[in-house]
Each structure stands twice: as structure tokens, then as C-alpha cells.
Image (tube, rainbow, N blue to C red):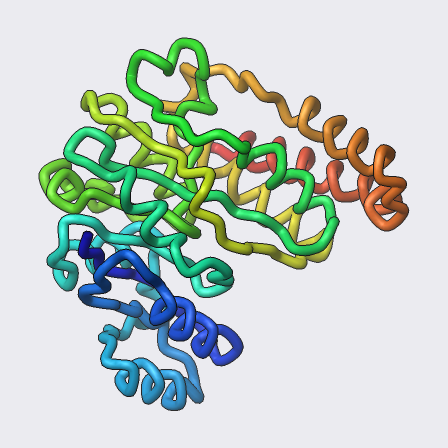
Length: 285
């Protein structure tokens, strides 16, 4: 298999060495083009030198022009040539030599989007949430599964995902829509609505973790709620796995492991998520 790689960067001095090493470490697969869309910042020259020194490509994006959807769309449309494109974010840590292969092998002209498993190295709240969201079993989801899974049928993550480029191009990608989040979920719905399938590769594993303050967490969920308010096509689906259910799953796991830091953080953390989402959804469309 031959794949191209797309990984948007911003102030990536702390990530670029690990990304390049991780990409070069992959086995069982041929790496074609590697493209880094780079949001311009002062002091990026050292990162650019490392990219070109590795034989990879980049294109620059003005800070005001960066878009999670349009920037990725441009990379796939204008720079990629392989049928399979693996999408990464800069803060993903590549920990296995075969994770690209394990993800790409799911892709076909039927299963046109797939995402891998993300794990968190430390037992934070995010650790338990990822454990809940990224199960042990791989699965394929089609249009026929939407009625049962409802909103969860569209769960996806471009932090570590693979696209079948011919279908992405045929469906006009993200439709030229400017989205600062959830472009992956938007595309997952698009392919299912068009009769294609979405895959989850449980054996394709990367590390991915954040460290948000409560203020940052509130803002993130506010923006998520606002996104849903701006995309009423998702209003027709129920949340089969409610936020409340997830919150109590995290609490139960923390109690089971006697995880004191998580128990102290649990209530303010979950409150920030809930209040941010609720406030964002009330935003006028």
C-alpha cells in the first residue's frame, strides 16, 4: 500500500522531530508524499528546514486563513496523489511502527474513511474518556447502522484518520465549508448518506492527550455547541451515549482506581463541558 500524509502544523517546534521520526519508522507500507500545511508564525524557519531536510513538502497558510476543513481540503485536492491519505494532528505521538498500515488496510472503495485508536498515557479524565470512546474491537459502520447508533454513527477524528481520496474528490470534500472543528464528523455523515462506509481500526494506535484549563475546556465545548447550532442537519439524531452517562462512567472508573486527582477534578471538569456545550448550542443561528 502507498499512502500520502497530511499533518497541519502551528508552532510545532516541540512536535516536528517526533512526527518525522514516527513517519519514517513506519513499516509494511510505502509513504508517498508527506505534506505539512503550516500556519505561519515567527520562528518557523527551523521547522521548515527539518521538513525539507526530510524530503517532505509544506505550504504556508496565513493565520487568518487557517481552517480545519479548508486547509485539509486544499492539501488533499492540490498536493496528494495517492488513493489513501492519512491525516494527523501535530500533537499525536506515533508509538507503533505499523499503525499507518493497520489504519490504511481498512480503506477501500467502499470503506472510504477510517479512524484509529487514541490512547492517553496518563490516567487523567481524558484517559477514561478515550478508553470509553475508542473500544477494543474494530468495526465498520454503514448507512444501515444510523438508526441504531444515531449521532454516534458519525463519530470520527482527524487526529489520526485515513481518507480514500478518489471518493473525497468525487464528493467535493467538505463542500468548501469553513469549519474550525468537527470537519471529520461532517464528512463521516456525508459518506454514510452517500452509501459509503466508515471504519474504526482498534489496532491502529497512537497517543493523543491535551492539558486544558477549565477556562479552555469551557471555551472548547462552547465552540462545539456553537458548531452544532450552525449544523442543524445533526438535530435529527439522538445522543444515544449521553454526556451524563459518560460523566458517570469516568466517575466510576476513578473510584475503581482510587484516582484522587481525577475525583477532585471531576465535578468542575464535567461542569465546564456541560455549561460550555449548553451555552454554545443556544447561540443564535
